[in-house]
Length: 365
Image (cartoon, rainbow, N blue to C red; front, side, top):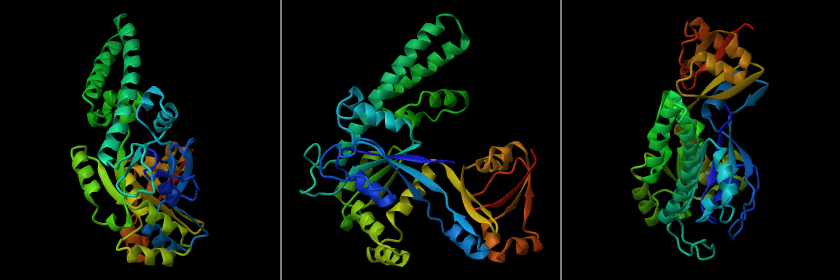
């Protein structure tokens, strides 16, 4: 499944520098507001040691990792919900993504100007939060107005949805993002159809200097305190360090550089892992002589849904799935060896896919 994350933040917080480091694209990273006017789009290959291990065991003709699409969205300023700066464009771009990566500036550097003249990540966050809330309130008010007219006809469904929209409106008026509602079933479907900006899952990235990338600093401590009740994940990344890593040619050089910085892995790995947790995603694999490939599905997906990620015909004509756990595949070294010890399972339509499953689907259409 295609996954698209939008990088947002105030101008000059390091969004484009981080974007360039994470992707193969080269966005304009400049020391003035609105260097990014149109959204830049790049692709991140998802690093996965399990894919590398399966490749070494199978020796396929082709290896295809899963990917995440990253969108570098224009910097936001106060008043964006009313069209200030590039506000309308910014907010429209956010509406298209699956999740938001909100970058806040947590480093001091007199050579890099701040749009408000001071470094205050908490204030920066509050500005963006308010603009998203204001735009959502506008969206909800328009939908409510329509439902009020429809409810006068006496339709039960319209009256129920009017009650729901009033609950959403009240929540936003209390400056709470729509994502905290956590509605399910019909109410959840209704909420999703509103396409509210504050309903998007969010990951906070504190862009720090290289000396603060492990333990943080006063800015990150204040920021974490501010978001502690949001049930949101916060990670520390130095966009400058990631930029230097991206410029190194060999994997050996990159690993050596990361270790020298006292890190266990590049920031891109941590960001991707956080994005997967944020969106409740897992990975399964297909493995054969022609191709070893990673596939992304929602946690809790059943086997036919996982098959549908490969092709809709696989889901429509699903018969069964042959499943090997990643641990068993690695322990015994091949599909044939797994079969010989009776570890290959034949699963039906109700099988819940596990992270790391190696799967082969039988179907008939």
